[in-house]
Length: 146
Image (cartoon, rainbow, N blue to C red; front, side):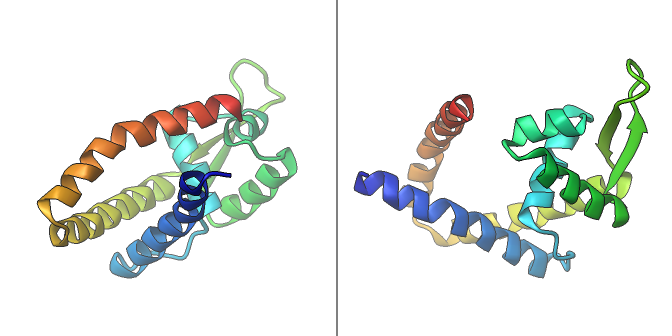
C-alpha cells in the first residue's frame, strides 16, 4: 500500500466523523449516526427507493438497510409506501422532518467549513479548490468498483 493511499484512507473516515460531530454541536442537532445520514442523503437525491435498491446503491447488506430503516422509521425519519408499479414492493422516502434535518446539517457543516477555510492561507484554500474535482473523480471511480 502506498503512503498516499494509506494516508487518504486513514484521513477520510475521521474527517467525515469530525465534521458530523462538530455540525451536531454547532447546530444543536440530534446525534444521528453517519450511516443514517448517508441513507437519508441517498433517498433525498433519488426521491425514494426500494430497500433492495438502497442496499445496492449504498453497498450494504439488505439486513443492514432493514435495521437502519426500522430504527429510522420509528424516529420519523423515513416514510414507507407501496410502489405504484408493484403493490407488493415498499418504497422508502425521507420524511419532511428528515429533509429539514439534512438541511440543518448541511447549513451547520457549511458554516463550520467556511470558518475553518477562513483560517487557512490563500494557498491552502486554492489547493483545496483544486483538489475537489480530483476527489469527486476518485469517489466516482471507487463507486464504479463497488
